[in-house]
Image 1 (cartoon, one colour):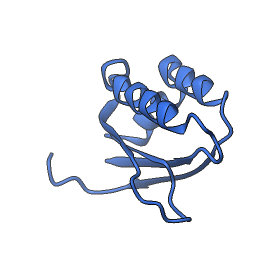
Image 2 (image 1 turned 90 degrees about the vertical axis):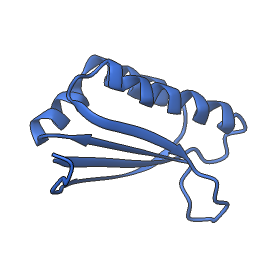
Image 3 (image 1 turned 120 degrees about the horizontal axis):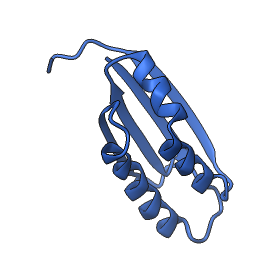
Image 4 (image 1 turned 30 degrees about the horizontal axis):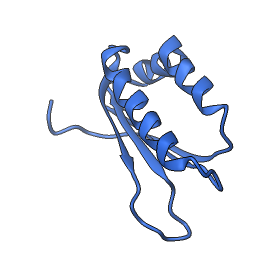
Length: 102
């Protein structure tokens, strides 16, 4: 199994709450559009720590090939287009893990 985690920060955006709710919905809608997604979720941060990011995307795929298919899928690219209208910072981690649910 492959886990793909991305943290996003939208610094100084006055419409951040609206952006985050819309972005969260768009992330979670991908499950119905991209069959290679094994699991996907998004969580909006509640911490006010200076080092905190605004939202986390956590997704799982059965293989690295499935992750690559997700990355290049038109619906994922549309989500990136949505994000490109906003200034943002992000951090990404992809790793292989042993699932105990299979």
